[in-house]
Image 1 (cartoon, rainbow, N blue to C red):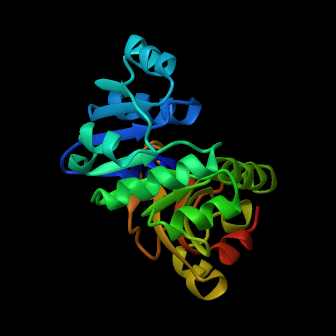
Image 2 (image 1 turned 180 degrees about the horizontal axis):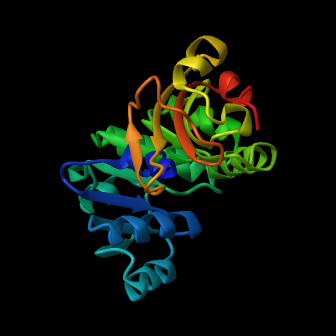
Length: 234
């Protein structure tokens, strides 16, 4: 069970399976390559002809074109209004990023995901209509801090700033205690969704019996407030 896969790429679900990625720097290339490897049709766009040529050479996108995304007419000529999802991956050039996001929304793109490089950038992107804003540096910093202070948490999927689903190692304090005895809902504000199977640790038992006993070192998946999750024993 990989909860990390639920975060960014889950926001990109599309029945049309067509995406456009504007900005072919490290982040944009990573998005292009991952979507392409997953079987989605991807159009890569950049103002730098060398990056476009490299994307085609490396085969990280089905198509790639060089254009100025701050020009609405250029986006329309590239067929951007026909795409269900556009990812604006121009994180280091705030003005270009904001204008491109605005152009994509005004062109009628239903779902625009934009990369931000600062908190102010996040606010600007939301103001011009970005449907989803990602701040990779901030998110990676938070994840690093959590991994250093809570090494027992294997995976985390943030539902919102206050609540998450986590895959966590069962602590010694919970060993051989039943789910009823632990009373996670009242003590921590958490709900147990699944536990790893004793016979096959790679598989999970969903909605386990309330009288099932947990084993220290096995894995459980819980949902609830971040405050409650942080209070779990290590």
